[in-house]
Image (tube, protein in one colour):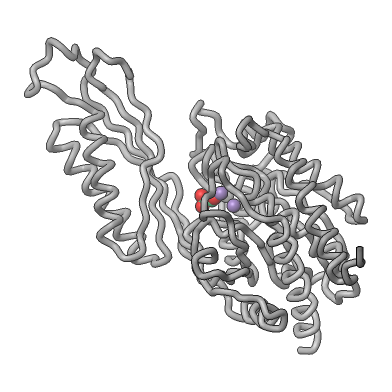
Length: 415
Ligand code: GLV
Ligand code: MN
Ligand code: MN
């Protein structure tokens, strides 16, 4: 058998490492059927961060964990520095690539980089998924100084646990975080699976992200009257679930009215949740997102107003809270231009697209230049055990990152 050329050999070795590391991470919080649950500020998330630090240390990096739980691996000292990475927590019954692919790819890129004038660091941000506390990107927001103690203290998980209490259980103290994402970061690069079908359907290998959608998370508490399901005439009911159902459909209808808005009711809690009792109490969570800040604000206001109208018409009491509000972010053009020059030089098909999902890059972009590179995922499925991406595509993305970093290093140094 003839040996593959040297460049191909190292690409194969990189894809093999990516495959093995992702498989190893998937055993942490791993579930039958290929799913992974590694919620924010749990022992499983911490274990994944320790594994990342072990790998980085073996490659010669020095690692530290900040009080918010973000793990930083310093591959090359110096400031300004390049920061590369993503997150290691997952949603409930999530997949093995969302976040993890970006961290593993960042390790590949950093260990292949040498002789840069800039410092080089890889980061695994903590608590990126909003799945546990309703608010996404907690780790990066604390590091950027865009989430304060008041905002953090208002959050709760499904059991009423605050992020600070959950973090304390695993040895962290997020309220002590000193923001560190600042002008020392020359540029942040995040590789991520696309979580959509544009790359697959357009047959492009790489996605270059120009904008990241913002999000508003709303919590509603509808209080009616729990009553006997047989003895209460229809006209005398205050059914909180019937009102909530109207609201669910209204949320869908409002999002459809706007060009770029998407909105989801992904969680409802019904009390007493009994076949023979009229539901007296419902908690309901809305996740509304847009790449257009005006549409995002307008749609969120319409949801709030509609909820008031529905509950008033049915004689129910309504409480509401804005759990988080993140603006859409337009990413700077220059790092993207460097990435697409690299794609062209390699004859790689690419596509410029916006991200409907939220990412740490959107938070870092509030403090430093940031760029995102997408690789395809099968059928666009994500936040599901069926999530799938190819280690070869991730390794290829890491190569593109690495050469873009090399060129960014040379360009900035020559200025
Ligand atoms: C992050 O995964 C998000 O929900 O956008
Ligand atoms: Mn993610
Ligand atoms: Mn996610």
